[in-house]
Length: 253
Ligand SMILES: Nc1ncnc2c1ncn2[C@@H]1O[C@H](COP(=O)(O)OP(=O)(O)O)[C@@H](O)[C@H]1O
Ligand SMILES: [Mg+2]
Image (cartoon, rainbow, N blue to C red; front, top):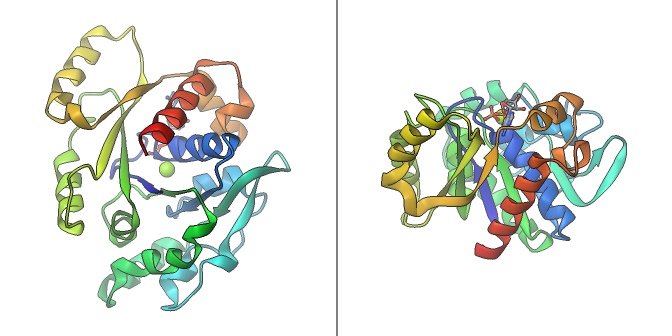
């Protein structure tokens, strides 16, 4: 199953979800590939001891017939290989490549084409997207079986979601069931905000995942420390919530 983690807003938890869901699937014995599609390379920093200057996902978008396989690396955490987990890293140069691609033919199918020969090798492929609806994100939407949209609890958190749905509908013939929404950084103490956001979510309630990810200092600290919350704080809320999310997605496909 190919899952794009996407929201054109920054800071909503795309990378956090990509890293921890990838680790969660791998931990459950699923062969998992995480493809970092963000030039900021935050997922790559977590799982690659060294980000190569060549051999990143950028190759796919630079060369028409580039293969994905040579770009796949075993993932590591704190110097140890993570069983069942592989990553295709990104780096900052992807941003320039994305700008140059605007005028190329079939540009939105590069990733899908490159991934096709490798699909039998993985149970899950996760795509950590950049914070925009540009050509790289369009590739991810085109490739994915499902789009997972993390959203946080704030006054403006659902702004732009209509544009996101419009992009999904434009790219996919059938947008029905094409996306699910994940509530991230939930804080039970903020009653009024939560009520407001829940009202806003009423129109998309059938697409909401039932797992919510609570706001947790360990999630933030794990990212600073450069590892998934599963290894940083295995017994805390963060690991508990991401375990629940992993199980929910494995149950519902
Ligand atoms: N549930 C959460 N609890 C606490 N901090 C979080 C949570 N989700 C994300 N963060 C923090 O918010 C920041 C932005 O998250 P990130 O996953 O990098 O967002 P994006 O990839 O959408 O830009 C990071 O510092 C991350 O650690
Ligand atoms: Mg990110």
